[in-house]
Every structure is written in C-alpha cells, then in structure tokens.
Length: 351
Image 1 (spheres, rainbow, N blue to C red):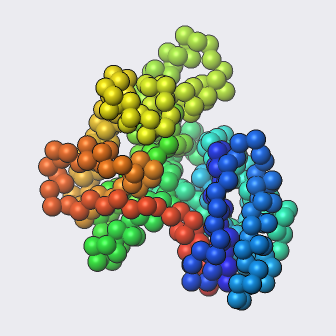
Image 2 (cartoon, rainbow, N blue to C red):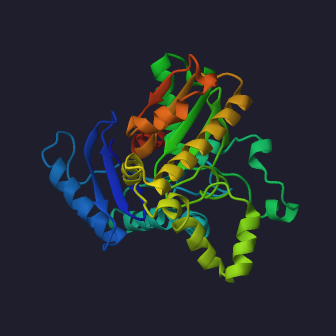
C-alpha cells in the first residue's frame, strides 16, 4: 500500500509518498511562484515515476490513496473525508476564511482528480483536532443568528498539534490519553493549544487563522474597535481589510521583515523595531502559556514545533525564561511531520 500526501500552500508545493510501513519512498518541495499547482503536480508525477522504477513491489505510479491537508473544513467537515465532486463544491465555501491556504489545498485536489483519477482522495483537516472543544472555548459571545450561521472557534494547525502531542507522549512514556500538554506551533503562522487527557480543550486561532498569537503578517488578538476605526478612517472595502489583516500586519508591520531569522539577526544588531517585535512576540506567547496552565491545572510537557518553535533555541529560551509554572516540566522541540500524520489518519480508514 502506498499513500501520497500533498501539503500545498500559497508559496510551496510539498509532497511525500509513503510505503505501507510509513517509510518515505519519495519526497520533495517545489516553489509555487510563477507556476500553477497542476504544473507542479505533473512535475511530482514525473519524479515519483522515475524514483519507483525498480523499487520492489511497486510498478508504475501505483498509489492506493492520496491525502490532502485542507486547512478549513467548516462545521460540515470535522473528520477525515473521502473527496467527491460534492465534497469539493462544499469546501469551496471556506476558501475566503483561510485565503492563504484553502484555495491552494483545493487546487491540489482538482489536479489529483484530473491527473490521477483512479486513486481515492481524502481530505484531512487542520480543524479536526479541535472538533470537540468545550462550548465555553468554542462559542463566541455574539448574537445567535451569527452563531447559527456557523461562526465559532475552529482552530488551526491541528494536524501539527496532534502529531507533536503524540510524539511528546512517547518521549515521557505515557499514554496520550493521560497527558496534559501545551503545544506551540510557531512559524509564519503561529498557534498554541491546551491539551487535556490527550484532547484539545482550547486553542489560540479561532474562526479563521487571524486570532491569537502575533504572526508573520497577521496581528493575532486585536481590539475589534481598531478594525471599526480603520474601516471608518480609510473607507476600506472588505477585500482591502482582508489584505491589511492577513498580509500587512504582524511582525511585518513592526519590522518590515517577514522572515523570523532576519528579525533575530536585526535584533542582535540592536535594531529597535526588531527588538520590540521580538518582545511582543514572546510576551503574547507567555500570556497564553499562563492562561492555558490555569485551565489545565497540571502540565506534563511544553512542546514546540514549526520553523520558529523548533528552530534556533533563543526564542524557546526567552519564552520559558522566569516562568515559575514550568519548574520541573519537560520542554521539547519536536519537528512536526504533518504529512506523516495525514498518512496515518488515512491508513486508519483504509484498514
């Protein structure tokens, strides 16, 4: 059995082909600049065919299933789902809620259906890990008609949070069902999750990936009165506001930089904007850790991942510095593997 997993975003096309024992047969990452998703898909097919020629037990492009990371599944999709035309049409409704991700996720699905039509396709949702959030964490205090229209906390990076939680449980030698963790996925987009007895009970991202921690180009938690003022002051359209909040805010707005490594380098040179941006980034994370410790009561480990979270240790060190609640608590940096987690979820269904 082979499972092909696609993880496609606005800037990159990442794939991994797994064998039955989850060993990687072939993997690669392509840039999405100046090329379509379908063109990258065709490049991938060529690479796979070349790689598996002569691999024992695999003839041609013999893929038993294709898995797709899909960021937003809305209220309809909370579990791994086999994709047909009807599911694909429903998923189109959520593209504007995760504009940096869903349109590219769905382009990958369309390419799969067109170019590898014999293989069944499955969507694994970033929101699925948070499907059982308690109502007190999930429900927004807004008028009922909006709540009934589907506005609630969905949470994101769920595939990553689930993977590192399961890996952390192995490290401490406990069943995941007995573990309390705070997990942090820190990258271009960043989120933090409280996990109690193996289940997510709160997470920083909300109805969309805008809420929560300060991110590369997104502000995270923001007084909505600021949005109202900007709308009145600038007379912005909804599209302009979306662009402002998703592409022009966060660390980029504070420093003019989007790569966190560049911000760290500028901070080391005492650039005042980079120093302030780093302080804000760390401060917001510490506040969330304190809040999540309060609702968990006890903590088995603090777990970091993502390009920032499992990258240079200076960021992790500043986050845990002087946090008394972490005394005696293991701190792990675990490289996430969303593709492997997706393959595992699909294998469960195929069995």
